[in-house]
Length: 181
Image (cartoon, rainbow, N blue to C red; front, side, top):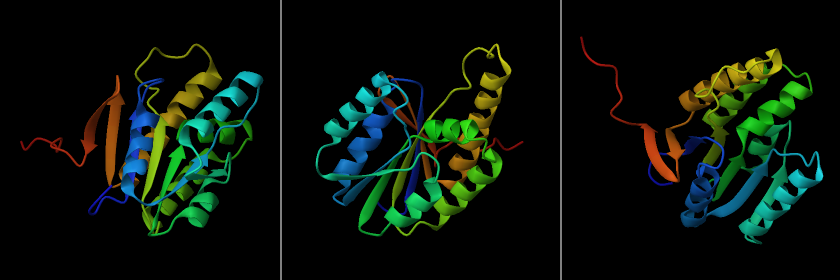
């Protein structure tokens, strides 16, 4: 990330290429790399996924695990000579919900932290609102909370990119201003 862009939100569906895109940007930055992981190894398959991703990043990355205390981890890691990659806000949100945390206040705290970071950061999040309406209350609550989190994170970040089929589409800043009537 260069110029005035200090915070980037990368959105996309499952296996869209959003994490790879974000990781590539970090690796091209030339800055010290910090990965803030929000995933928890709840089962063997997830533990294997986490290990694979950590191996793919390699030894040039420092990893901080922050399944719940994301704002504290960001404040600890962010620095002008460091670039932070948070992957992902979706898992962080589900962790908050399962821990019965106040999702709205934690989300607002995160956006305040994003706006005050002393160095660049990239946030990865799933776009979950383009599918069918979930058939149960918890899934609908999660979808709605994820949509709200993505909206306020997008507002807090300098730039927003949507990745689909591995292709990035810049949403912010962009030519999508409201039409003049």
